[in-house]
Amino acid sequence: MTALALGLRYFTGVFAVGFLLGTIRTLWLAPAMGDLAAVAVELPVMIAASWWWCRRLLAGQTLAMAERAVMGGSAFLLLMLAEFGLAMAFGRTPGVYWASFFTPAGLLGLAGQLGFAALPLFIKPARR
Image (cartoon, rainbow, N blue to C red; front, side, top):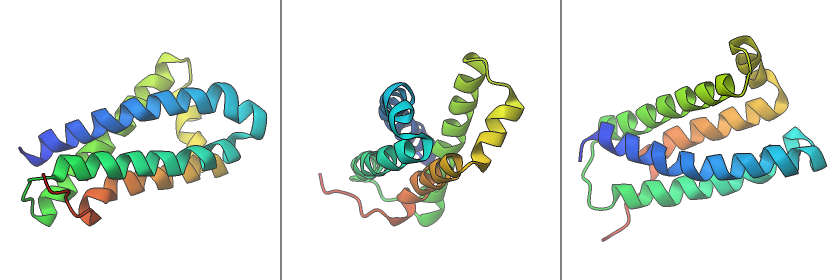
């Protein structure tokens, strides 16, 4: 499987989990504990899900580091585009969306997204 195809699959699986957890965070956790605490609760679960899915996708693959970088980078690009699209669909302006990355919760979330992108570089594939 090509690095771009793996990146698409990596994005799709993690985005599905993130959509569910993001809904829970936005509707219930953030109002109860604040944005930063809600992201801090969600982030370890997302990193664990990303690690698990990435490891499964890499099983049986022999990818060079450059291909792993393409996998993570393409998944990150798709993630950012999907999040931007959702923000626009829910009535946020592009300026408000980009400004959200410069809040404590936004910076923590961005750090998690960058970690998601980097995982293919560091994960040892599972054996099938």
